[in-house]
Length: 420
Image (cartoon, rainbow, N blue to C red; front, side, top):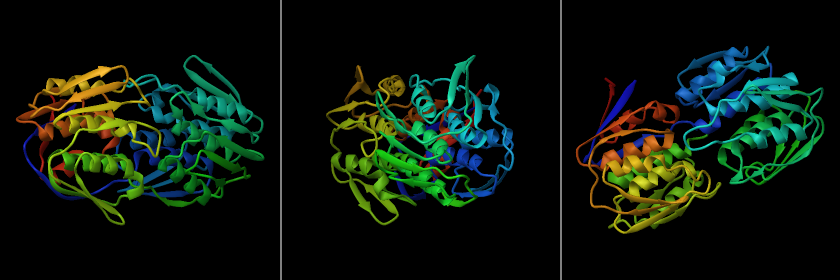
């Protein structure tokens, strides 16, 4: 098992290229199960999560080829059962449910379980499948579904904490091969949902309204193969922009979609940083003293929950009192205890973190608890005096392609070593 050592105090500068979006790639890879014909996907990031998804596709019978960032998938024949040993490593594996149900008219997929930021149930997914005409049972840790024919329906996917992204993906993938028209109310409008809809439309689906809260899907009899470029990862882009704010003299992220990261760039401007936006790039640079912030996470286009931990790292050394409220996953503050080990002053009050900025952080041994918390600890280590030793960095490898190497390109002193 690896760990990362971050030797703080080195200023960052220069530019890096953003990888393809993890949260787009996973459901789009699953969507290749909807056709017998070959699909070619470009800019698929090299991550443990995407590798797990490819393993799932191969287990289900698909032929997979990977060359650099290009993945070719042909699922001429598909099995409808994905057991626990295959799906247990990644929650997003549930997004094969929709394609399997649509393609095979049945599916048995083991539940992958919750995660350290709290239980994230799939009840909305199952409600959507039932509305489309599937019989659904959850027993012995498995979801079992069967239908003689999916039929279009009006479905509301609004959840307790807002729309469900994976639920929208899953139901949309099932509905494209349903008989008649499906209307999804309360749909997620994230760019990753739009990316999936665009790919499905290239395959011959008829989806309207992607990017809004209302999707209209006219079912078709079959889909064909397609080629597609995965959109840039807006969370990776946001993370590197925050890294540039933490200790940069001018950091540029290339291959980005500026509209996708607007909530983050707006927050950084409010915090006193200069942001220069171009057609496919964004640059963050100092602009005098930074300022405290009040941030509330919200569904897109609001401030993303996946950037909350990274902003906590930045605000921990911003003079004054900042307030961060987590409205999507209220328990998502596992990184706070580790930041406090480095000298941060943070108090948790329900779903709100009150951060009193300190003059400096000190390097310390810390432990990553989830993907975004891991990134936050790396950013804090860049700012801290001394060396920060981060354990369990397999979390980082789930969602950041070569994070340590890209930070090194920007001037960070960071190394990956084998744990004792």
